[in-house]
Length: 166
Image 1: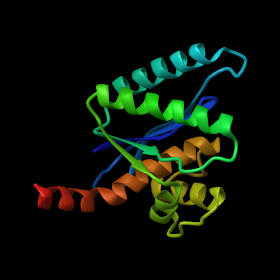
Image 2: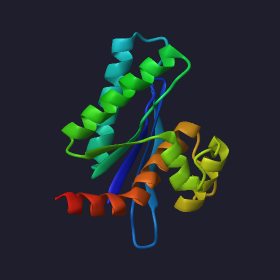
Image 3: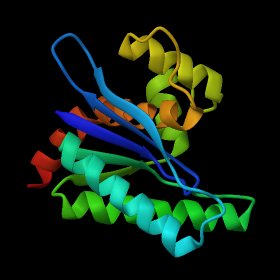
Image 4: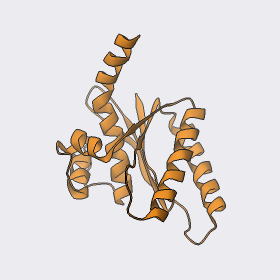
């Protein structure tokens, strides 16, 4: 199963395609989509949309795991994250992928074993779980990989629940 983790953002949108395998998870692609802060909003959203569409076509994930944002102090940042998240959800759905959301606490708990883990701890665990020499950089890429790993950890239980519902 390929899972594409998306850490939504307008300036930096982290992504990581992780494959579940017999020997554990394997990173197939990790990076960041960037848009120029000086460009107008419609241009930046269009660039992000086209990059996400191309990424989905290239990786063809079964599932796209996106961070659910509950609270942002900065309203401008919250709006940009919400817009990027919406684009990712729509593009994933159109591409035929299942879309799931996880809170930052769920991701930290699944990857680091502590819902209050800091970015450094999450990044180190991402590197350990994926067999990387160091945490992906920037942190947005590591966060996206953590989202994909979180889904892989939750997927078996999600299948059981879905089967019992019916």
